[in-house]
Each structure stands twice: as structure tokens, then as C-alpha cells.
Image (cartoon, rainbow, N blue to C red; front, side, top):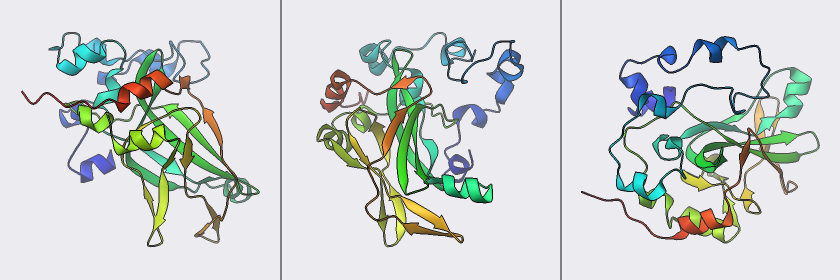
Amino acid sequence: MKIDREANTPDVHFANGMNCMDCHTAREIHGDGIEYKSMKEQGAMDVTCEKCHESLTKSVSHTIHGNKLDCKACHVRQVVSCNNCHFETMIKEKKRVSLPVSGWKFLMNYEEKVTSANMQSFVAPGDKTFLMFAPQFSHSVKRDGTKCEECHATETVKQILKGSIDLSWLEGGKKQNKKGIIPVVSGVQYNCVYQNFNNGTWTLISNPPAPKIQYVGFGSPLTEKQLRQMEKPQRSNKK
């Protein structure tokens, strides 16, 4: 929310004076006597976009995608994440340290639709690394949906089709990260910068082992067919 405010792109709901309980229910907040594994488990949450937006003018995008895409796939601006969550510091010093990341949005499957997702990277003792992908709704909602050309036939899609993409790298000693829409696909090499944290300083891990990859939060990677659909050039209707 802070990032969006500073960029003068606030979530459309908060910009219109809404608060949490305008969308969420007391059952979600206080529970219903059922122990859910996660807030992403089916049935745990009540709120959906469709409960408020029952009738929409069918745009070209709505018609083409039909029920294959969740609203969040297009209307979430970005997801904010943290990279290099450092387990050893959590164990030894009982504090969390990581590097914040923003400006990107991942796409993966959740409840039979494509939705917005997130990625976190971790460093464990012994320089072990792993990545975690999960469906994620950030309160960074925009009124207008993502343009076709922001998803289709992008340089990011081309790199993923080749089997490897850099998600983060060092530039002038500072960490940079990929921006925009990033599909989550099984078998792709997602390259990240991994660093250790010692005495308040981040230091580069040279030649870290390939990360283990986990798909959590009841999400799953996009299929080959879905990726091939993203390979096809599309242009937004300007009318």
C-alpha cells in the first residue's frame, strides 16, 4: 500500500474510501470452527470480486478469456515480495531479514483459473537455496485491466519458452529485479541472486546450488498449452 501511495497509484478500493470490512466478512476474520490449512484453501475465504461486481460490461478481454482467468490476473497491478529470506539469521538471532522486491506479478493456476501469484526466495544454512511460488492477492488493484501486449509475446515469455529467465541480478552493486508479468511454468530455470547476511551486511553467494522449487498455497504452474497461448501476439482494443 505504501509503494502504491508513493507512486500515486493507490488501490482503487482504498482510493474510493473503502476499508477492510467492506469486502471481508466476520467469519473470515474470527473463524467458523473449521481449521483450514491456509487462507488459500477452498472455502476459507468468502470475498470474491464477483460479489460486488455482479454485472460488468463485457470487454473484448472478458469475452476472449471467458472463465479461464480470475479477475486478479488482470486487475492486480503488482505483488510485493521479499527475496533472500535468511533462515540462519532467524535461527541464530531470532529476527527476520530479507530484501524487498516490487514491480512484478507472477501468473499461475488456482482453482482452475489463472490468477496473480508471488515468488519468494530463501537461503538456508550451507548456502542451500529454494524458491516458493504461490497464488497471491495484493491490495494493489487497478480499475483498467492489464493490456494484452503486457502478457502476450513479451520478451519475458520468449525467455521462459527458452527455459531460463533472470528474476534478479546485481547492477552496480545493487540488486535489480525483473518487472512486469512473469508466467510460472514447471521446468523453467528461474535465476536469482542469492546472498548471505553477516554482521548487518549482505554478501554474494558465489555458485550457489540450483534451488529447490515449491508450488504452495494450492497453486500450480501454468501448462504448456497456456504458455503457448501467451506466445501469440495480441493487441489491446483501442476503441
